[in-house]
Image 1 (cartoon, helix red, strand yellow):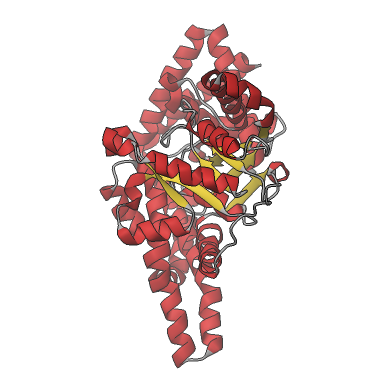
Image 2: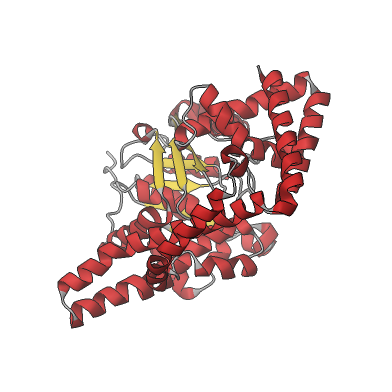
Length: 453
């Protein structure tokens, strides 16, 4: 009888580093994290392959890793992040394995994937969890790409090594963000019901490729149903604007959803996107005109430098004056707060936006810079120095005050941006343009209401 395998235990370093990441990612970067379907995650010790959509680079696996703290996680990540010897050792210690792509590392490097897949398969036979992204790259839109079947080959190979006696589970999951690029926003991870491969073992032995294609379609379909999938890429910008702004908020309220609660808003957005797709099939000409007008509305707002929320609140001249007064009163607190926290997600983002061409990497690099540079400089070193030279309570006070100062600083900047937007909205020379945009916006919303009934 085969000896029962158990997952490798976490090292003390890994436990400490995970706690540190939890503080930076969940305590500082995200305002709120939601996890749905945790009861669907198989017990630790079960060979599990977690499969997900991929829309925000490092943030996607990091958030899953920090939520599933009861197990050893292994991730397949793009190979170029392993080029640095120091990063290579650290990433492998955290369970990351390099995935080589022909489009980036060349056809010769793809052969190295056998070593990676063998290591991932060994992790599965040890009862560990492996996570990967079958799209083989992140998306820059809220939609699901084509799935490769590599994850299923890895899973069946692991089952074969265990003589097809133990079950290997495929766990569909999805991630969803209220905003891809900003700190202090919400994120959501949803786990679907696990799919057992055991019923497919005999089919796989006879027809491996056909069996994997069949299961792949099932897995992809489940993930697509869980996430926000906008497949009308021709009108993507207009649809994304409609669901993310005033109309989406109005639609959510009218249909009994909570627009400020991300899990509820995701359900509302899914329903709205489906309704827009059905309306396009019924009334293609009317919907095309709506999308043309929406594109005009978006361009008009960008030209003036205003956002949709201003039409909802419709501020008068008094609003920017009051915001300006509030900013002036809070300025001393802001200056005190930005000195220790400015390097945290704020200053790095300014430079990262100029250095990084693919904007979907910005938030991931921002977190990385904060983890390895900003937080040690702004928090860890000051706490240690205060403890040494001023005593424990000064160090403890600074540690407790740090996240409060960061949140205050971030909200102050948001308030400043709203102040600027309000000024542009009520500016005399913009009044005629704002009035036309308001009429166009109301016309779009009214026509949509009639079509979506």
